[in-house]
Length: 220
Image (cartoon, rainbow, N blue to C red):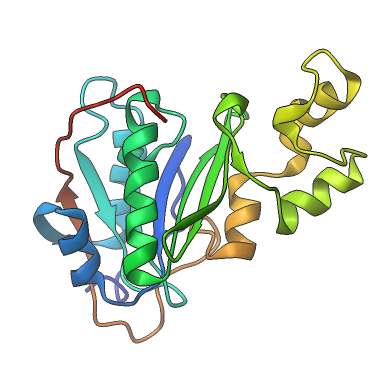
């Protein structure tokens, strides 16, 4: 199950996901405190991802856990959405802790509606970069990799969060975020779920699970 059934690419109008550098799906489920984990087909899980993203009442309770994908396990759902301010501080701390345990952990948010991009790259308990296009004041760390190269191509020598919002540079970058989408960063830093499927021969199944409740906070 999981890799033998139809496996469409993971897509959603607003796609949020956590990537943990491990092939141990069970350990990721345990580390996150997920409950009621149950097997589902890849196709049904992908459909559910988009349904949950549109759920205005309870978008943060359900997540999908993938089988190993190129050495990473992904957990998908708005629960991990950096731009959702009730989630930002919690998932930031969570990602940092997971990176201390597994080595690398990353968060991404991609909008197919062109209304937001976000990512957080953590390594061995340290956050290297957090960028949330809708909330540049919450950015931390230095741009690197593809983000840095694209900023340079736009003539932005510093960080996008430091730009005068009324400047031409800021306007040009914000028009399409310099084509620097979360999927672009993910493809270089870990894995882009919109263009990849589960590892061939994986014995793990796609899972649907319930995410733990937490006390929301305004600290980010």
